[in-house]
Length: 262
Image 1 (tube, one colour):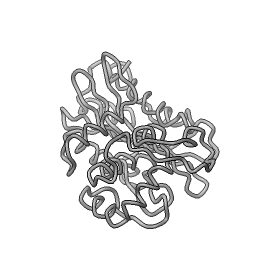
Image 2 (cartoon, helix red, strand yellow):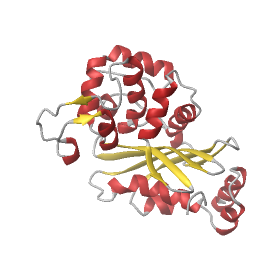
Image 3 (spheres, one colour):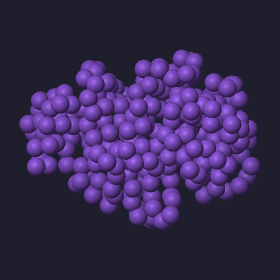
Image 4 (cartoon, rainbow, N blue to C red):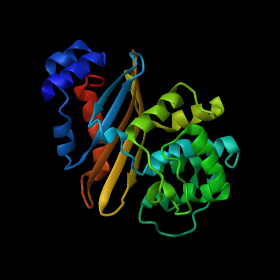
């Protein structure tokens, strides 16, 4: 039954013929390899079709963690509180346990290193009212913003995999209420991998609510022929030593099994 369902999904997803003939994506095996559970949504922009794993879970809301840096960077640039990617903040000298955070950061380096303190400081300068205003415009997740900083890591803000993909579709097509220059800037910041056959854009996220690890990789993958918008949510017991690499590796394995990348 599961095999038939997945083949049906692959056919409707308009993937290469060899994908259907030679392999079926074994999501349980891919997630299980990292002692994790979760869900995945992959949207083929050209065929306007979805592939989903754990359908109900794709509608469940989770802390966005550092995937929130995508809309937050756009908000910073649009409001002018940050002029460009070279806007620098001085490190306050506090050791936050992650070496790459313990230094001065620009918007660019803070995005690429997921430096929470930088984004927390700029968000406080901007104010929660302005944040709330933009999240409502974007229809981003449940739009709940509070003073429990950083609220994207330990507050009430929640977003589902389906909502992530809806937001990212609009990012790709420039259908968001931001200057196109800023949209282009964020797209450049999101580049994770690039070669002659594809460009993978994305942002990881990692939150640790209540003895659990909750992680994301969200973004879009461009090939010569197609664009695939995706959101992969990964969850595991606290202390899972494979969790840091699981988010990106699970996404990579899904793309390989789908025949999107080699």
